[in-house]
Image (cartoon, rainbow, N blue to C red):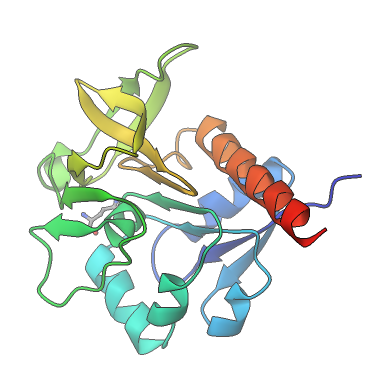
Length: 200
Ligand code: GLN
């Protein structure tokens, strides 16, 4: 039997519970991450949406910024989580920590502020469209050559994969469609299989 994946959810601020529910529904074990030692045995990590400046301040305060930066397993970042994983964020707060795990540049609140939060059907290049809930979402203004675009909204990439890092500008945990979390868990399984091969 395949061992269940253990996924950490960064739980300093933001919508942790919805991610946990979705991952558990897909058969993963979930643990909330607030301390360095919580990151040790994880197969993957989710950085949820919320407020990237608050999350950034708190990871510094909790002393986990460097450990997060050194985390080498698959990561899913949604909305504020996408901002934190980016290489650069326009309209960011000076000194805001960015983990730089995905070769993308984003603009915070790039679709407008709270009133411009919206839902839209996203083209995943086949299959039924994916419902995206956008809440003060970041907009991707640049993606490096190795970054794969998995879904678009009006020509803008909104779901991307850079190796082991998956980022979504929207909130896949809110619309009830499990496909983004499934894709992330596939990435986790691939990574685990690769590790097992290297060790064995
Ligand atoms: N606008 C928020 C930020 O800049 C992100 C919003 C969200 O995660 N829903 O961090």
